[in-house]
Image (tube, rainbow, N blue to C red; front, side, top):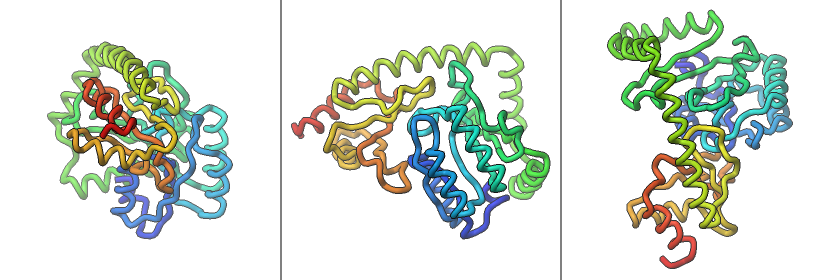
Amino acid sequence: MICRLLLRRGDTVLVDDPCYFNFQALLRAHEIRIIGVPYTATGPDIEAFERIVLHEKPHLYLTNSVLHNPTGAMVSPQTAFRLLNTASAAGLLIVEDDIFADFETIPSPRLAVMDGLDHVIRVGSFSKTLSASVRRGYISARKDLIDGLIDLQVATSFGGPSPVITEVISDVLEGGSYRKHMLEIQRHLEKSRKIVIHKLEMLGICPWVVPKGGFYLWGRLPDGQDSTQIALRSLDDKIIHAPGNVFSVSQSASSFMRFNVTQCMDEKIFHSLENILTGRR
């Protein structure tokens, strides 16, 4: 909806490199010019970001500032401050995709909060926390943008979201069970994350950062290994992996692979990886 409201064919949008692969697919569907900003353990490479904004005059910057997908990193307060100053000076809108917010065990700074929604649009969702079948989210933005989004939603969805699903979400939030539900999920994910990190490290695959929540790990492969080739060979074992270059605009992440810790508890995954990495198959 944000893309349909704010972008036109040929406009320029910045994304992180690496970033969630569906960001790229969405923007390409709108025939948008995509530019990647190198991502670091503390957020986007701020000097590269400032240089690109100055020379390319982008319309939007699309990012995960917390529990970044695929890396699991979080933007630091220092990077966030410079990021927002640059956006304000350039009149650049930032879309803060924050659908993993409730997986965070200790709240960290949000661009939308620091900015006061002047140059940031915040997107949230319940599809990751309640159920994948609950395809409902929300948008926080300044009033003129919200008015435009409401008009667009009415025009394209014939009235808005399902009242049944909306009522289900409302009941869960008001009933007080949501917080307990999320605490249980956070504990489960922390346990799974530690197990998966240990098993991957035994194979020489090390986390780029250790996330403070969520279910993704961005693993650096042993020297000389290519994640795309590993993913292709893993298909023989009926295992699907997410190779690094799927997430990279510049195709510079061949030595990385994203792992979902909730889907890595089967020992056959690690046996398959070991066989491929050691050349047994």
